[in-house]
Length: 593
Image 1 (cartoon, helix red, strand yellow):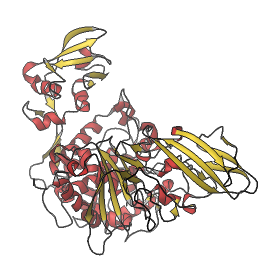
Image 2 (cartoon, one colour; image 1 turned 90 degrees about the vertical axis):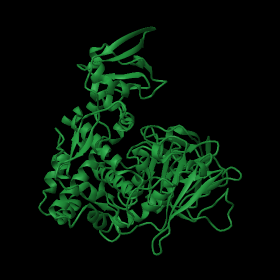
Image 3 (spheres, rainbow, N blue to C red; image 1 turned 120 degrees about the vertical axis):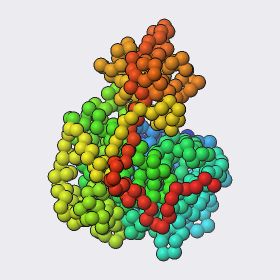
Image 4 (cartoon, rainbow, N blue to C red; image 1 turned 90 degrees about the horizontal axis):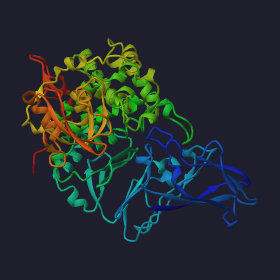
């Protein structure tokens, strides 16, 4: 689709520098999708053409010659939707036949010499006839639903409030407690009611705001809205008063939803506190073209990743067992990650946008954006340390209220020393600066002792062939760790040297049609079953296609389907249960309706 925009910018005669948003908040990347512009022109309000040229060193910068006598310049843009780059997916324009998600940063150019929060804007949009919309924007009175005009705001506020539009948008009030700001859910899909027909989604989402209020001690927003698109690509992006969430239509069966589905909205919701209203000082900038310092992403994203998972369990969106399996998988993966021996978490923060896309080869050597998952482990270990130091009287929830909540520290920007000071107040006998230096700035083996302090240990025992839950957990990374083969839908992406797969003669680019005579297309779990049966068969038979020839080769492996899981330590107190217990008076999982 195409988005046509008209932007009027106050100006004086002479050269005017305009900027297409470059570093859009939330994606931690210089990925502002300027490459999707399909038209750019400039003229004065009376129609006089205004010559323009692009900066020779910066494609996001436009230099416009404002004609004599003009007090403004009119820019006309055409933006090409639905072709995001690796870093713009959450801040792009996504459309379908029945709905659209509009991120305003794709429709704007801004004065270079003025902070975004000092530029006022009167926004309006013309939608297809009969369409409705949802956003945390304030419409002016008596404006049509499909052509709303909005109250004046700053450019910063507008970019922080994307608009979801569609032929049919379903709405639910999730939180309406007296004295607290309302929280809503707006869903766009071919059939929104059918897409969320499993009531357990709504029950869990209704619990979520109360659990977040208990965690942070209140909210900064005066209202909040989850904008959910069902049936499209996976995406998510945080905003102060809303979040953009996109996923495949999983609402038909709550039980089939993965951990990613269950954590998406809690994660983006936590960002209203951690990342939007409080964020590392190096990420607090007045415009969208200055380069931020990303050192604090292990807090911005790592703490959010941990708290989002905790809230998902407390609200009943995620079973405790699934959360524990995810923890075991993360510890297992990071304990064996070769890249951890040369690259620190701090370095992954500084290279965040270079690591956005997974590496097609040797990704565990390069590392990815591990400030999410390993950052989450740091904060789980921090919670356990605070609890141990205080005899259970204090926890990470106290940090959330005192440092990130509305009743605690003031101001958006914070420094790492300020965070360390608050952690020290909560647990004075913990050497927090040294802990951060070792875990965030250091490299080497993962210190997983915190798992034992929680009353658990990671077990890598073999799963039986009839354990469907275990078979379903067998992802390409688990297979790679077991036999050195990374395969997606039968296509071999990587074969690690010195592994059973390499000894079998397999190579990147091969296509494996079947494992143990079971075709992948007939049974997506064929490889998982073959791994589970390997202790009895002692090999996995692979039917391979390469260079127009078919051949069969055995992978000599008998270790079974070994998946990480947490096993309780005999006689130890389960500290994870205390962390995951609901705080808002709701106990237990969501029952099947």
